[in-house]
Image (cartoon, rainbow, N blue to C red; front, top):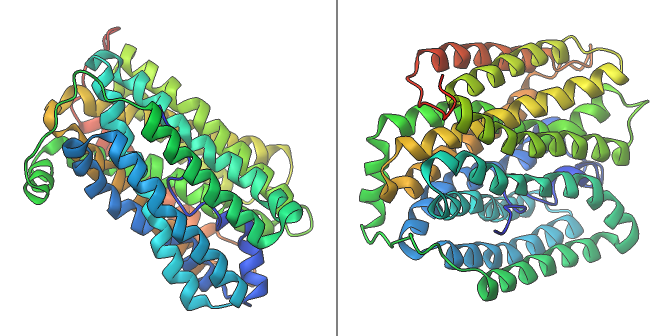
Length: 383
């Protein structure tokens, strides 16, 4: 199945954010807005792409979203080359369309598997987050090798090739049936289900935290440890962060299938809270910070797998796309606000983001309490 490697947060922004920041003399707030805008649009777009996938199928929707992202990448390149921040924000808004693609894949994967295996299936699909790691690792190197325009043309070409592969090689599950209910009643129907709101809240923490950190981590590392971390080093660290979440996501899905998603979600949230506290202490750059971020990404990945394993058995089959879209949107929204909060709470005199990290600790603790109160579904191994 095609991986959602274009999803999340504007593939060309985070890895080379310093290029825009220095070349356009952007403030902390402007950089945060630049990084957060595609996340917001991608999040809201998932509500509609998920519902539209129920109607038109994943093959058509994957192709449409991939091709629609191509002009956005080129517009970003134009904005950066002429130094227009206003155009950069407009381009970032358009680029967020690519972030809606995740909501296409969940109903597609779910249709191929029985309910007790959907945690694994959606976990494997979610491994497409590896695109975040590849982008963080490779984009700064592409910039050095191909130049600014060459890098963006390469990314646009990759989108076109992927769209072609989807159109010619992909097929829908024999079990999939189109749902021709009008779009807005379908979305409103999903919003009436308790499971939608419960999973939206939890996914807003686990996936939102992943999006926020993988978007903001290069900026964070180069700000807090300017003498120890350069752009390539920050990209490598961000790639490892994303890779850890990618590996943990299907593991979370498998464990949720076996033991039930609730207990895996609780383990995930407890890990996020504990590790965010350690990051908030701003330890010296080295092994401790590296291991802490890797473990945090792993905890988030487990939680992502658990949440979508929770949706499948708890949702009417004809509403999986709509519910998944709303939940995925909540995850994207969860990634929109933290970069803005980090920018607004940054303390220049002490060079610290501690306040923003403490907010994550508090929100994560609240989510842990809420998850403990929810009714879980049984895994094959019981709960």
